[in-house]
Length: 122
Image (tube, rainbow, N blue to C red):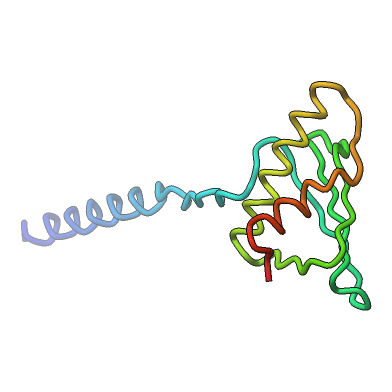
């Protein structure tokens, strides 16, 4: 007769502990990719008819365009990690330059130079 209340209490205790542990599972924290800058972001504009011509726009975190460059004669593979890291480098340079004098630079050959100097990005 005493075994039934003891078994029931044990089961209730086990259920309460398992629910408490399940309810407090913390969400998975994803690491931010290395090529994402904390200074801003970029957008790449391309046309299917001219695959070797593209325009890259660089923005700070407030959404202000800080640099724009039209690049011709180079393929831009935005799935390539090296290309993304090069774009981040140009973005960081552009944001710092814009913060110093608040002038939007256009076509200073920053992207083309970085891509060609490092062997292009196919």
